Length: 143
Image (cartoon, rainbow, N blue to C red; front, top):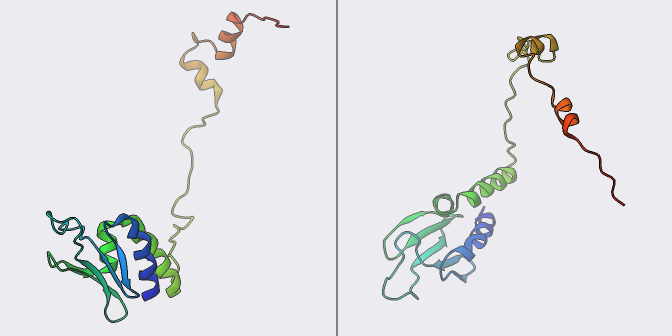
């Protein structure tokens, strides 16, 4: 889906140095892998172009070649995940949700948490927090 790749390449254009659309199917920017020329900051030799209904990335300085989807995956992983979600939804695939069967996970508590008789037997020398606050509270009235 050419339009979808173009959409996501346009989204990441702001994060690429000296990026611009040369024509409808060609994006030009500085290579994030080699950084292009160290002497001239205005050179941009990284290109995204269309080949067989998909964008391909090629750097004419270091020779790095990859698909634009892998380019997004390596340099912008969050945007790549969003791209995959939209791509799969356009294809008609729904995410699989594997729920465990209810027989597999039966919960049975081993002890009763609300049983207060056990908590009293553990340490009877401690006072409840409500009683501690009542001992030191002074009432004041403000006008």
